[in-house]
Structures are given as C-alpha cells and as structure tokens.
Amino acid sequence: MTLALFSNKTHSAIRRFVLGSFLAAAVLAGGGAAYAANGAGGTGDKPAPHQGKDARREHHPKDPARLIKRLDKNGDGKLTVAELPEKAQKRLGKADTNKDGTLSAEELKAHAEQRMKDRAAKHKARFAKRDKNGDGFLTKDEVGEKRWERMKAGDANRDGKLSPDELRAAHAARKPPAAR
Image 1: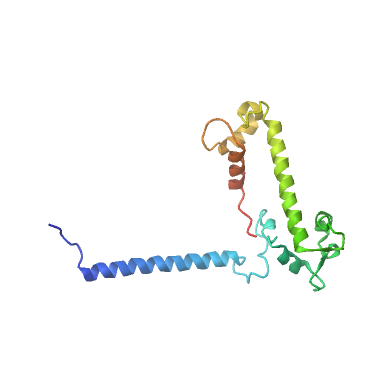
Image 2: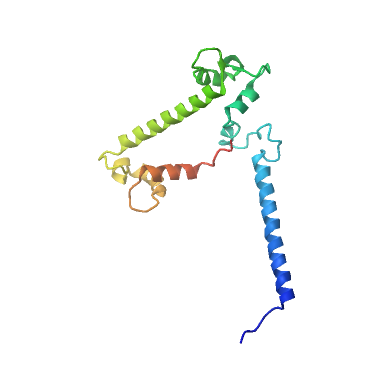
C-alpha cells in the first residue's frame, strides 16, 4: 500500500514550478555570461577597461584579425609596424616574416604560436635545471625549504613531489584566466 503525499494535480504544479525555476536560473546565468563576455556590459567591440594587474592581458584578442582591425590607425585594412603602440613595435615587428612592412593575421598567429613554444621550452629547461636528480619531480631537497613552502600547495596528490603537470595546474589556479 502506497500513500500519495500530493494529488496528481499538485504534483504536476510542483514539477512545473521546479522546471520554470530551473529555466529562469539558466537564462539568468546565460545573461551573466554574456554580460561578462562583452566586457562587463560593453558592446563587445571594445575591451573592458583595466580592472586589476592581470587585466592588461584581457584586452588582447586571440583573433589576430581583431587585433589588426583594432590597431589599424589609417583604416586601410592593413597593420603596419608603425601603427603599433611603441612597446609592441619591437616585439610584434618580428612577426613580419615576409618583410613587406605589414602584419597579416597569419604572421601574427604564427608569431604567437612560436612565442608559446619558446615559453614552454624555457619552462621545461628551468624545471630540468631544478630537478637535480633527473627523476621528473621537484622535491623539498631540490628547491630548498623557503621555495618549497610556496610550492607545496601545488602537490595535488600529497606525495612530497611536484610533477610538471602539478606545477602547471597550480600556476594556472593562481592566475585568473585571461578573457580574450
């Protein structure tokens, strides 16, 4: 023998209420995500103003075409090294691999990918230098007491050793992701 707590009509009303509440929450969450994606209420065309020390990375679009469009001062659809901000001229000037005086989206993308590879190689070499016994892990003995106190939070499995993956994950968790 089963005892029904609610009638079918009441049960149906509760289900509609729960479903409606869930959908309303989803719509609000989606609106919040869109709000954040558009630079905290912006139009999406211009980046949000700087809001912290890590915010300076947020205004650099991943899409090289957007970068070109944003920095193209004379509106000719081409980005020259002279149109770049002074600080970027030296760094991004190297991206002009065909030496035609303009930076294409392909050149900018290839330049960014090469910088990422170079950075990864530098991190790998730094890790290898600290890994004195060459076992692929960093320990307290290898990095010293003071540094280990800062690094040990990244030891996810608490085995007293830091792998490159644990170190990367800890580093990524420390910094908010750049919204590009």
